[in-house]
Length: 183
Image (cartoon, rainbow, N blue to C red; front, side):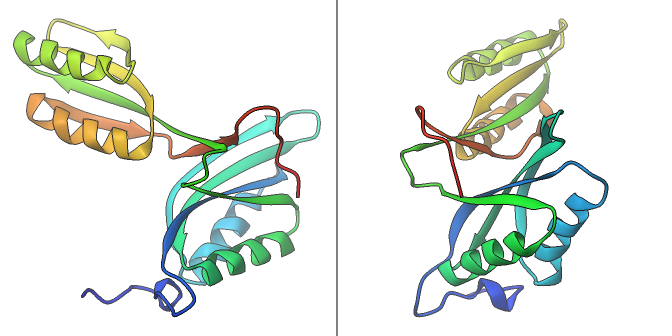
């Protein structure tokens, strides 16, 4: 069994590691992202993906979406530490197994090859409602929005067909229906 890279990621008798999507609402100002990321790196927590954007220009608020993995104790510790940071407004923890939450990731995929391979690749992408953004006789760039594991599978399937470049946003999450997360 491979040795964990961090003592924080070792399973304990209280729980096993699980993926979590942590969403943090912060003031949109210089240095805030560095403080949030520093909290993770300073304690040996890994960030699997990160998406950040301003969500309210008037209030100068940004939303940081972080995918991480840890035991229940580690996830709880991360949330407590994040809530102590200034200027964090609220922190949400979305479990991947929660049916009330939508999770998506966006990927841009570039495929280059002969017409036959390109046609086969396009058919595979259609299953994911891919949107062709650019195409030539020898290539295309397609946008796919799906779950992370679906994009991973598509990437592996497209490699033998000429996939040469991948750009991904990282996961984003939102509650379903009219429910809004409040802390």
